Length: 160
Ligand code: 4NP
Image (cartoon, rainbow, N blue to C red):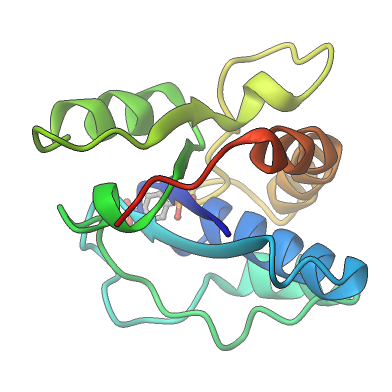
């Protein structure tokens, strides 16, 4: 079982959308014994709250329900409890690496590494933009998810 954790800043826009898309793929493809997924933020700005309506809406437009997801902050335990930490942008990746406890060795990657022909290293933050930003984020997540799944399935779970 490979455990995947998507990490953005607020855990209300980008990482919950990625969480929902992967959860849906796991259900659709019967991968429940191979992959598990969660998401979190490097900040606690929205701790305990639901996802941004923009993400909930764009997910629903594609048949995916993320209305149950609750924002939480990245913890030290996440570095042991997950095999693959996926940063949605470079700042998220820097924060993840900076806070990494010793003696933990999850794989740490950026989501855009899995998007072929990606023009940017970052999944753009739609928080301050209009509704169109959420569709852009959804399309990037769709584009990168199958390569990410293929990569995750090549990993071997760390003992913990
Ligand atoms: P996210 O977007 O990191 O994709 O969830 C943001 C959500 C909230 C804030 C910034 C980005 N904020 O500053 O509150």
